[in-house]
Length: 214
Image 1: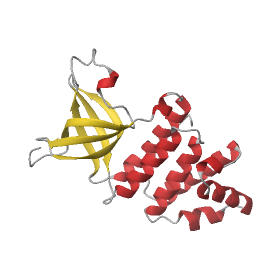
Image 2: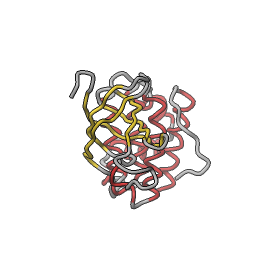
Image 3: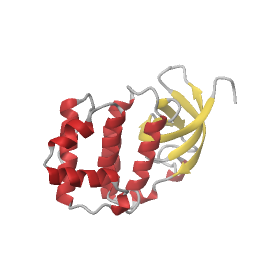
Image 4: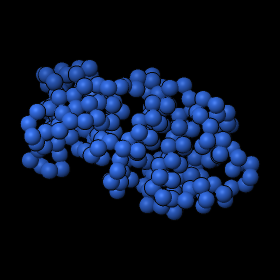
């Protein structure tokens, strides 16, 4: 490895074709935050390449990076798959929630200097979404914890403004392990929409509004 290269872990948040020979990836690194990187296709043209030759969306990888002339980019020289969320590929609904969570995180990650905690939260939440637990509950817990870590008074200003019964239901959602949560889907949706609305109105979080919710 040359002195200008570096290596580390990363979580793939976005994946797009880039010309005929590259993929452009948006990676969250626990050490370096958001990184825009290019990965050359393993072999053959883009039409012939196999999905097994390239990383997938939400993969956890370990890679060796090299700087590009464009300082906004880096190249992946080598990479290894650390963990793949196969459960997301078998459930379209779970995949939608994973995409929604990442879309809520990406615009707000550029302002964070220390990303190790956020990397761990996002990795844990995506793994939970790929499992058997409620993906919408995973989304709510991750969004709440992320906002609280950034200093927003979600417990005081958001949670306490609700009626007592809804407060108790929200606390159960936020405090219990996912596999122990038993909550009516309508109540869960109400809590989630309330939290999103609060953050849009009272923070600089950019949470996309979608025409069709998952």
